[in-house]
Image (cartoon, rainbow, N blue to C red; front, top):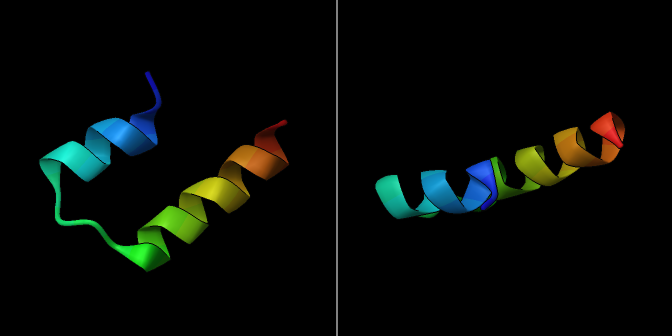
Length: 29
């Protein structure tokens, strides 16, 4: 399970947050 999915389930979906998470995951790679 991804933290992003967990947050999306617990919080209202936010495109900005989604993009930020994707960027962070890319950098963490």
